[in-house]
Length: 213
Image (cartoon, rainbow, N blue to C red):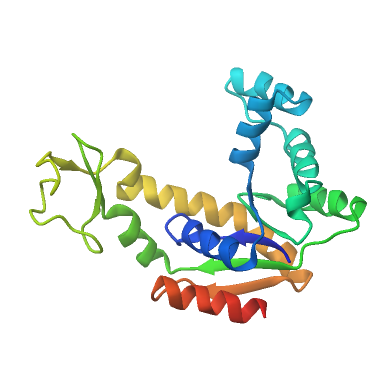
């Protein structure tokens, strides 16, 4: 099965991806991991990407698509894969379709983990980090015994700038704006499988498995 995994920040996409890898024995392909591997191995595309990254510029689509094309030819992708973090735009989705057609392949399912915005705000703004040891807590899900201090080292707990409500709202709006056209694109192809991202991790996973059966 060739799967694209979509979900806003805080939807639990990473956790579900790990469980899917284990169950289906297929690799998760994230653009970040691919770029790091290509840089480490100093492949021609990796060196091309490095030119842009050194300037602080975004790596262009054609370089990322080239990396994906190389990655999908590797033997561990023969039974399928989970694409995570790509495509992000309709232009990238169209380029991916061309690459897959050239490989005699296609996307089978687009899993979209759906969570209400108010729930996402609770999840993302509730995180707290220890200034001393970096331990992570959540005011609702995993609170410390003393709400202002770390259980491990008694360090002060604080909310990171990227976890405050304005920043989180902005991240969610950017995700919505980017992903809405992408979901429409794959809906027209009949590939979108919407999964309610609320409930226990296991329940959500079981719903994904049922949908893919």
